[in-house]
Length: 115
Image (cartoon, rainbow, N blue to C red; front, side, top):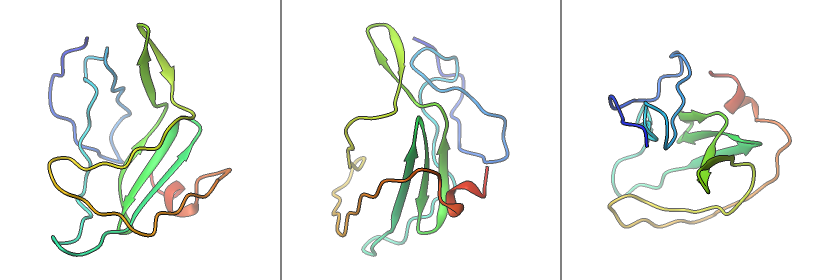
């Protein structure tokens, strides 16, 4: 398993970095900027997934873009092009409402216009 050399924060202008169980960068990158509203207010979360890439937008703020997502399986890294969708939170209670799933054949302009 790779050893994480520093804590990476998403930067749309930075060079692409590979994050995985075996890379020297480790498997995590923190979102940036924080597009969330104050506690108690509803947030709008748009996640666009196409092939093995995804774009995460919180309240119209792009906070992460992932390219060539992979998952470990039997000692290999397998492309993540299909599978289950999990909704979660880290360290706090969360409520969801108005969840919509729609198929896409290309990234919408809002997700494609920024690096």
